[in-house]
Length: 256
Ligand code: ADP
Ligand code: MG
Image (cartoon, rainbow, N blue to C red; front, side, top):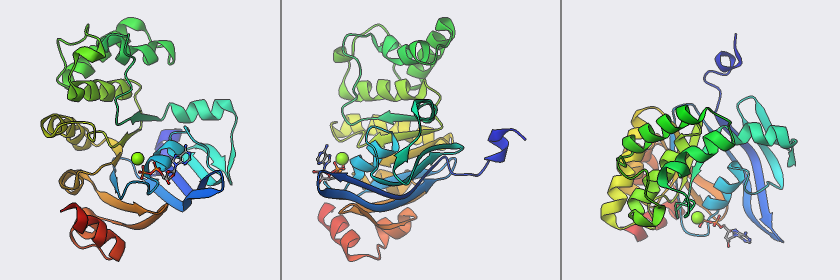
């Protein structure tokens, strides 16, 4: 059996008893979360609840102070102690991350933004990486924009380019941190449409979002986070439509 076969059905990512503090303030308290292959998880909750910190820990932009993190067979951290740089590099190849503010390189063309890491980090063949980048941009509705620089695109187009950039690395899981909160409603819809398309293709996705309609429609599981803990999680019909916890109800009521 190959490793991939052995791990079929195993979580793509597993976080256990995660803790994270900034100075003396603990902002993630004993968070456990695992994501199955093909699962779409939406994380909702009030500002300051720890959603971004959680994604930053999952994507190794921040280090846990306690708990364990693994990407399938790659054990990244155990009891808050991290593996060496090879382990971290292996884990980094497993995921993509899409930020609120696109974070495209402003001086690179759209095409170069998408093909740069596959060529420079993954050492893939340039012609093959370019062909794939063009195909991904076309899939994101951006054909004809390859030679522009990011500031020549709308916010929605920039965000779709940053999704293409994440996908170009062939991640097993893609994290989105409020991918539409910087966008007007019209541009939001076009970005949500491409994320929905990825979900329909069975990609494994974790999306922090304030778009409750979108979460309800696309997520297999909704997690409500507040105060650095997972307050409630379950199918969208449960968490969004019939929340059990008073804190979840208060959050949802205030958004209506
Ligand atoms: P959310 O994304 O749910 O709005 P965050 O993860 O950004 O929440 O923040 C959770 C808590 O951690 C907040 O109290 C925030 O002020 C704090 N925090 C986040 N990043 C830092 C940091 N780099 N240094 C100090 N405190 C931080
Ligand atoms: Mg945030």
